[in-house]
Image 1 (cartoon, rainbow over the protein chains, first blue to last red):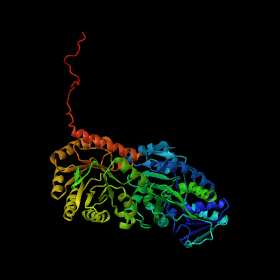
Image 2: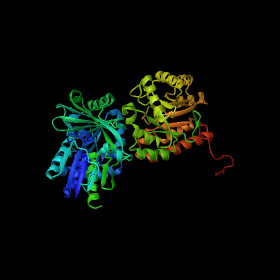
Image 3: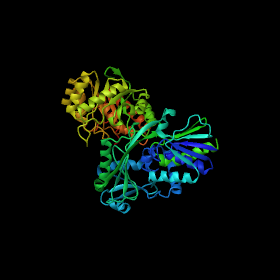
Image 4: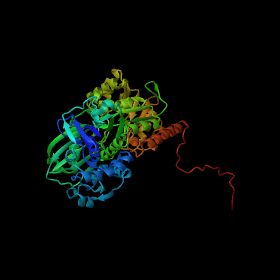
Length: 319
Length: 256
């Protein structure tokens, strides 16, 4: 079975790995010049937070998402399972109760417990929710690890390449182009997200911290070497690669209000890309002739790609 | 109910932001019976092309669209956004929102009157998001508005009708102007209360969009506005300070 996967984002690489592990001859091609250059997953938060996501997502996201934690723990050793801490400013503390009513698998925590969980947040928040079973990873390291594993399995990854049209040298094509695949998927839309990376050694966090905020789902995810990812806006727009001052101000203010040490942090990167989404904001696998399209991961790329990648492989091997 | 000569059966208008997904938004609008939805033309969407996909979902809802200028802070910004809205949705309607203060998101009523005048002269039919202030209301009407949209409480606060007396006076003062309570509605009972006060309609967003079950909540609001409207037309009793027996006392059996 010869399979070509188009797109080396989290959808393409997870699908390629599931297929290669089941013995298919897989090649991956991507139009970007290198890994991550043309993938919105590169800008993801990397939170494996199925229970927090219940706040606004369909129940199926939690059901499928919790399996993703094991999938990533098995395949990417950098996956960290230390939970998620959700906090709110005193004026938004009512939002914590609402968040709690809509989610599951958490404990209410007070100031003393927050200080035990994240010592650097001591005295800053008096109430929060701790989702102990959730996990997180650095998407860039995770994609790099998947690419390396694929290479070990004999999969060729070609960057800076366009998919040949009308090429019959492969049995199946897995189209994982994200928003770039919109031409074949008229109900796919873009939801813009903006994020930033900062570096500081003045604060240490072990797990993602979500700050409930009236306008944006704001979170801070710790990464190696003092890096923190701060995300992410959600704007109904297909405008790629442009960060507005307004979004930057909101994200920076949010981080600063979690801890003033972020005021002294170095800004490493501002990033923006477009999440591909279907009208129900859930991913979909669609077959058309030889081509299987796997798209619409929305804000749940790392959380939902493993389950859907399994189904892509099922569709190939048990049509 | 007449809004700028358009007859509408439902007194409920819904905002389109913050829903879990466009599919749930569509189902909620359907369940609410709303004939008007409002949509923000946020400029950070990045030009008119970039936001097309979402706006076409809005157009496909099959309701009338009331574009709004949410997030605008200056007269110039609001006027520019209104122009963009007219081009995008082909409607002269615009919900004019000019934010004057960050914490309460209360309207800048001075800029609001200026922007309403400019837009009315350009042929727009302006729905101004205002406070319950009577003098501001007079100025908005003088500027050409034929609908007023006073707040119930700050946007997104869900506190209901903060100043019932003020809203009642506004209704009494302008018996022939279409009045819509916009912002601050958190519960169906708040919407029913606004209808009982004699308001023509209510406009809300967060209460439905952020509910655990937006579709169920949309239905609850549909029933609530209907209840409030029926109650208003049925002429409610006046409250009294002491009990008044609902069964006649005269002729009651004397068990001594």
